[in-house]
Length: 463
Image (cartoon, rainbow, N blue to C red; front, side, top):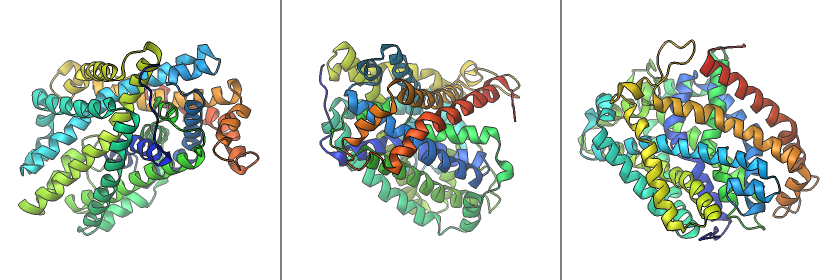
């Protein structure tokens, strides 16, 4: 087995895994999903999915990784269930797809950092033109992929863990500073009301499906990242407490991102909240105007700081997404780590080109597919997001639960978890986890997967 490493301590694992979870999913997609889902109604569903369903799946993924000390595909095979290795391959494929479009958005964030650093506030009104400039945006995405590959090439402790120990505290400090600024703006309370006061009349099956997909995407579940990171964890570490810290960090950062974003939207719209749910471009179209209103000096400082923050958040996630296929190639094919990193990074960048072209530059990729019953075409990037986030990740969580409960068996799962948690056996945590992976997660995730797939792709709404 070539070039395998491990985290130097529990804190290193928590920061790296939290970095995987805390990323663009929290600061880029979470606010616009909340806006599109009617505000607090979406937030409530998101929190329920994170703590009731995602937390047990997270513990299970980490336990499988630690038990086998292998990549997702190798992990299922090492447990004695070769046919189930296809589930690991599905996770690797999901992460592959996500990183291909995620890197494009990360390139946007880095590009906006450069643009606002030079005082180009009009970029918010020119978002469509910006994304059509494939040479510029492609260069930003290439630079970002290079930074990701450089960190991963340095190994687990020397690259991923070391970077996470710098990026995560920096990220927290920067976002808290921007929250304080946001809450001082006019109409900030209007934005907070939109965000925190639920209107359950807006709660639809589609909103629930998006909340579930957002929870899995945000927590890096179903894509092999936590099985991979779990394989680098020591046997004496308490993975339940680690998973709790990771979940709380992720949910906390997502919540804080909303506190930062919606007062800014209210300020810019004079309290109408118009455009709060306009889509993935929300932060790229709305925020530059808010920063411009601060004046040329303060606007440059705060505006560029925000998009530097967004770039840092993206980087903590892209390194984990790249690590998953790298671990697979290193473990299964015996390829040297450094070579595997650069080959896979290059391949993912190439696979991301259709997403790069699907934001106005190419008519074919911008109107890639029209779902049954849909009023308009869906771009390739949005299609990739729908396939990965809303279908493959929840399906992966469902199948992981079924595997743990009915194939590997809950007694073996409990034995692995108990190694770093002496009081686990017979505890409420064990009883709830067994109930969740045996009944709750398979039933809820399986049902939501079917209903979301039918409604999103086939236009069939059963409720």
